[in-house]
Length: 130
Image (cartoon, rainbow, N blue to C red; front, top):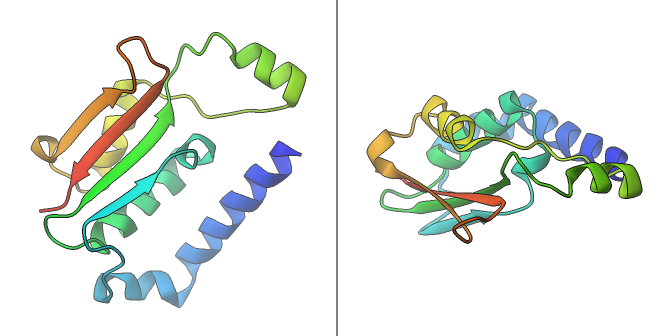
């Protein structure tokens, strides 16, 4: 079920942050130019999402970019998705989503928040790594 998959994703990320690998990320470059995560942050509680953003920021090369997506609040199909498919996502406002990046150490001038279309339901933040 989707709930089981959600729980497994959260457990794997939590395990990563408790491991030695997380402590070594500051010494290893994970990405040269760009990392993209669409369809992941919709399942992560705020604390895990901010921790993952911090790790991605530390592991990215200077001048690199992160492109991270999250479904926005106001999805008119959410009740049907939850009822028919037991598909539960964590919806965020523009402000909530941007605040997670600020809490992860990104500067406001390094962040751009857009939607895939003018009235779209997916928030996409481009975060530049100084």
